[in-house]
Amino acid sequence: MNTTKEEISFPIFTMANRGILLLCGIYTIAWGGLFKWFGPALFSWLAMEREFTIMMSTEWYGTIGIIAGVLLFLSAFYPVSWIYLIAVGLTGKLISILSFIMVYLPNLEWNKRIGFHLFFNEILFFLLVTAMLWKAWKVKKYLATLPD
Image (tube, rainbow, N blue to C red; front, side, top):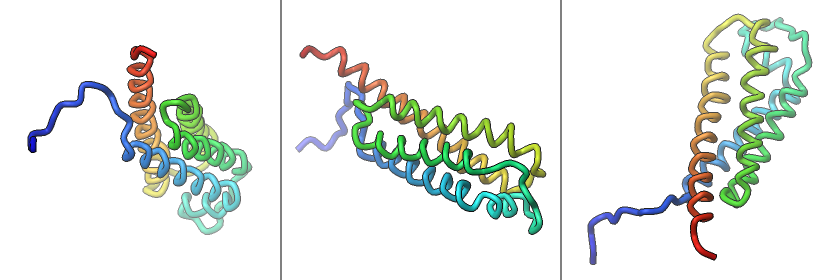
């Protein structure tokens, strides 16, 4: 029995990578749903003010999150074949980050809850999905070099 770890010479997309995509998708769907259906209450919580009112609708922001989350969730089943779903889901996360910063952040005062939302719900998941897209692209590129 060989107890040494052998070096793998080709890229692989592991089940753990699929799990990351599944979790990113589910988490994005959940937060998108919170913004879509409980947007004003959620923004009051983010603003740390009981009487805070948001002037803009949060439905479209939540809808973008739900769509991006569903695409990320589905992409976990066949990440190499459905790499375009990862790319579109990643684009949805980018749109989500930019729209929050440009549309909602000017109406809110910076606090730890907004920092939590931007870092954990947007930027961290954007980086994770970017890493998964890069890994899936490497595997797809490698598979294209193999003979039929």
